Length: 334
Figure (spheres, helix red, strand yellow):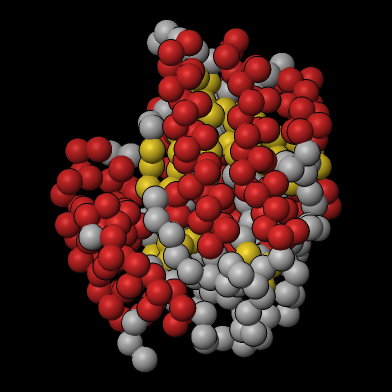
């Protein structure tokens, strides 16, 4: 069955994790282009402020308090979108968290909670959304990570959850294709993005966590998500550095193992002690901000811009490779 996507200005888009970071950037960008947005997160006060701001700017938004680790909450989110707007055209499973700490030091309870949010949140969101999308048609967008393709230390269970999301998303896409369902399934794979992600993470380290360079603007992820809502590609990387690392992992895994151990571990040794070691693993964090506090230069991704104009991708990949290699080499210096 042919999949037809509406123009963004005609869509209703459900976005989980919409109270900060990538989700908030996507909600604002979608609303600015005429989409009606349904915002989901645990922080009701932040969601109300965001919805009000979008409405003040001439957009249309609705806030629904949702814990994605609860299927009942996710079902209530879908029901509210259908009640308010008659349905939805794109569902974005964005909500996610991390834990910074060595795998053997993190408690089983924290590991399970991370999987409840990151993995089961996407499973619930996907299966609930598809009950509607299979009848109406549209797009399902899941947020993976460059960690869906490779792993790095200090965030081991986060990487495991993103690997699981990739396996689930790929299998789901095949099943929908076999059934002839009019739904595209896209996996977005961001590299390091300047959002409050480190501040929201549960932190077992003595220092505040931070992400390694290169670090990209959240606007690039929002652009990729909204491109998926209108065109439904299979995968989209955000950040040429992430694409390069993924390609290296396939060809020379021992090199990326060494780079991960050196660069990521060294990256965690600098910085002041974190003010909130619990993060937002069990309760809503301090929301309302798109950007984080990355100490690294934040760049726009030429690779991602080219990905939504495929003819340019090959021309820019070589440049992205060289730039990412230079940044990685610089971050490995004492």
